[in-house]
Image 1 (cartoon, one colour):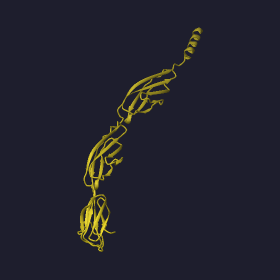
Image 2: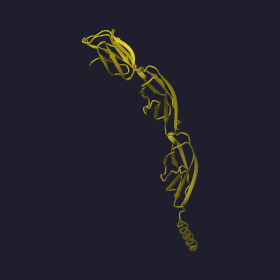
Image 3: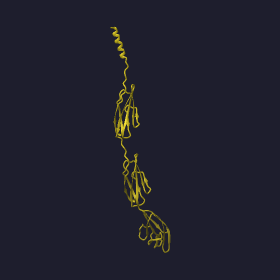
Length: 265
């Protein structure tokens, strides 16, 4: 009877001293795809105390539940390695990203409004662009989105707009017809009251008019009895003569203005 007791006693001791077995880790996770390519990973691994995340775009993390942002749409693989005292386990899942906003290529376009004196307001109607370059065939240029440009001569002018963004560049060219730029001015020849009249005015070796009146102050351009000439902007030579006197010199014409020239001044 005693032998049986001791045998049971020692068996219970042996069974009670057996080591506790630590289970191997089991890797598992879920994820939630958010806007802008952001993905929240939720670690559901068991029997692990260390983690390694590896993503096919080159990112990595050791956080248990990392928040990862993918920069472009597509299908990515996400691998989780779960580590514990009894070993490692890993799992790989595919993550499809469709929430990254894709910037489109720029499309260049513009309208314009022609004002007085060759002044043009350009209205930029380009899309998907953040930088602009305007080139005009008269040598002017601008990087303003919607510039105001003044053309100095009449005629057909070409306007080219480049629209740019990080993706690429687009351009468009339009023609603008300018017709109201003033390209001439006037010059009035006159004499004061102390000078005889009937004075002939010659420009470019041709008789252009005769002064038949005189007064103490300069008359307005076009006044009767005086010589008013219209020329493109520039400097011209003249010659004037009466029966007793003669004069010569130069006069300057400015666009859109009247210049008075008193003989003998």
